[in-house]
Length: 300
Image (cartoon, rainbow, N blue to C red; front, side, top):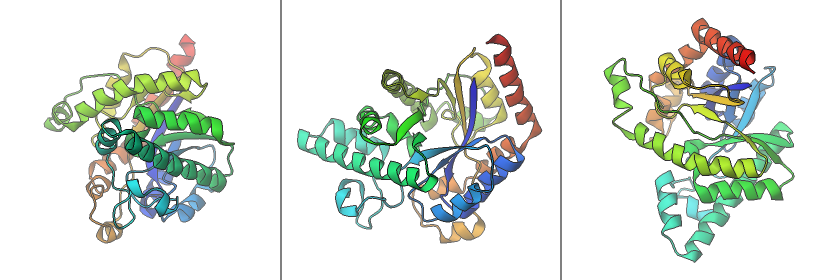
């Protein structure tokens, strides 16, 4: 059995990369997802070179930042300043309610950007086989999942693993903050991604691409706690691949002052990120992961 403890957003800022490296060195983190379109990519990758036995994944990103493709080839995805501007909901609405011409444009441009991010990632890390997931889980949208399957057949770079964010439902209410997860956006995301993940898993299985059978990190996004992780995994039996997602990395004070005021800034400065870093650095969480591995080995 494989237990992946992953931190998203590596390379999004230098401080974020530093924190993730600290969680590798001093904590229970064993995987990170890399934002390949970041301005801090090369400097951040140098930090990874000093680490051993780590798993990396491509964090496909058409939600924020600038494209790696030529802007004129992905105009649908960009605002007037050349930055990604389409939300998950906007892409779903405009694709599934658009005419055939609009659908072709959207699919063609997303495929172009994903292809170029995959090729750049493989080149930078010298890989022929890659793991992948996506910023804001865009890859769970059915036609985008189809794009990944198509690219897996067309490119020399193959997918060895793709994240399927199918999370068990669980109740963990120890405070008002916990309660908000069940009456806000997170609960909607949880059920929507579970629905979309069923189709994604079928496509990956059909094409012999490995994926996460159990995922933890949606219902308590932005408010992950050790208790929520334990509750999510408490009722599950033996699985081959478990992925636990945390966001321990945050902007430094200097980076926060210079960061553009976009919709993601609040997420990257959320104080709960420090709490998630503390989870990864705690001995209690380390012991929990080790116990989980031992328990599954005994029943295998």
